[in-house]
Length: 134
Image (cartoon, rainbow, N blue to C red; front, top):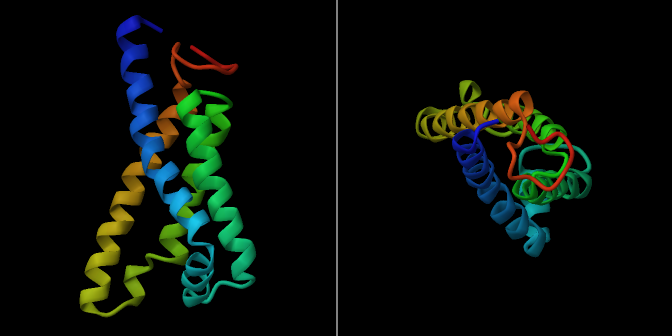
């Protein structure tokens, strides 16, 4: 991978990871609220879903920043983001105002999943700590 490509791969990883690290940290420090939000979406075992969400967001985000196991982390995170569309942002089953906001969130999640799948496909770039640097 050229220095030019590695520069952009590094910043793409950072930009994707920032969202997840901050969101995961907020969920961790506000765990009861996270559990309540999960429960409000009628998901079973809300404590488990909340803990897995934090693990994927915070853990995966940190792995992306470091470029450590980034292909695996990005793949898992892409699946998580796509699953969130179905379980949380299911705009097709909502009323007008709620549907519009959730459709926008779903479309953003599609874009984020696309970026994560690019990391999965092409790796973290040369500026990475872990194996799989290209």
